Length: 289
Length: 289
Image 1 (cartoon, rainbow over the protein chains, first blue to last red):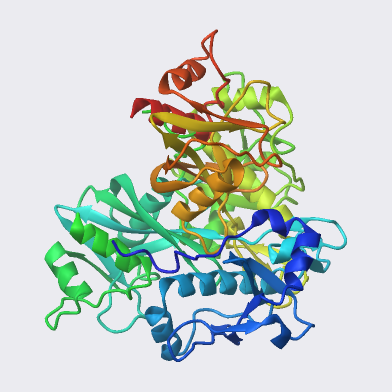
Image 2 (cartoon, rainbow over the protein chains, first blue to last red; image 1 turned 120 degrees about the vertical axis):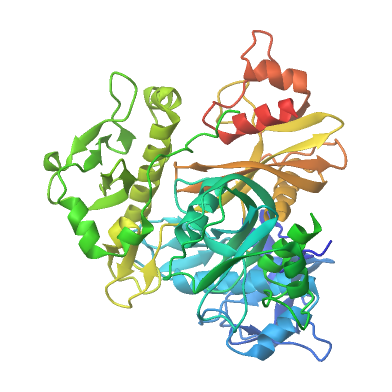
């Protein structure tokens, strides 16, 4: 079974050290510590296709460091650089991410999510005053009102509706020509996963669903930090009415057609999502069912 | 099968109206509209134990209203009052919530989460300037840098470790005497649900787990807006080492013992979590397996 993308980090997150300033400082002064190499928000990649790590001595003392975790007794950090951004623009970065060991992609994803969060929370949402890093980079605290802010993760539901052995996939206008994927949307306050799945399928494709079953989950580190929650929902009919603000097209596909898409067959009906996207894992699990 | 707490809202969230200012204004001027009655952040409760709704005419024109959704063609709103707070202090409020129709508790939970979110996001985390409500109360926009903020929901994993037919439950010092519940903790950036479940059980109780299976989910509207994700994890041993910063005690219980706790039997080994908490649903599902 293929692991979902951006999972499988070997780092121990050592929550107890985050709250222990002495222990954190000791790690900052331990020469074995490693700092993640970045080019802007993108990962530096070695000739072998792995992440590049620098020694603590190579990093400017001005940079604040986040403690990503420990592995084989070595602390792993990432600097809080001033940068924000959505998904990588360069196809080379996407290629590198898809070729990288999954452990490396998982570490990079965590680092990128945290940097993005710090840049978006330099001020307190409650009172507008500047915030400061605390908890070894796993929080920011307001200097004025004292409110503590913690890295956010937004749950997103991503799902296939299923009807008579076929699954519902859709495409957004901005995607590469011919590509289709699972429908998806942010879970809202006051909803369960199951309710969000039914709401999103109905909003985007006009399809009413009953039972929802959970399949798997993965983090997604671009444009914020998202928790992708993959499900399959039982549709109660096959008539599609798409919301043209969200989708350009939607269609029902057979397992045979999904297999051809995942295998990138020459006569495929549609292009499948890339391997590190959970929609790919979801389609694979669905055709294997 | 009992629904998880705070789920089952009958309101249609009408996402398309949030982005349509004319349609939203039309609803604000429709006399059939209803506004949720609150006392501070707590719900007003009728003699029948249901939520209390006011007409639009009864509400001060100074209050901004969030469009919770439509039901039977009537718009349902809640005012953005200036109030923040954790879980209700009054036992009467908890009693009312547990007696209320689940549909009403779900509507109240959504409203409370949104009010709390607005109060915590009156300023832009990116630049510190004031933000303004937009999208019918489902977002705030910075007047200076233009950044758009959306209501957050924090995923929390809550789980039973299982070993040789017994489940692991723990108690926090602040809980009523004798009460035990499932372990729980916030999911962090860069983690899947399964990884967060294993990490939390290991951090809090020193138990290593393998496979994780998803059981159910529900929103939790107190102290922010949380998505509670309930799972069962296969433990690889039964030795417990508790993190005393998190837990006062932890123990393995049999299905028989869990049944007695859920039934509030006189000779019960521990007190079970209340019905509207997902830990209660999780225990019920586990004993029924």
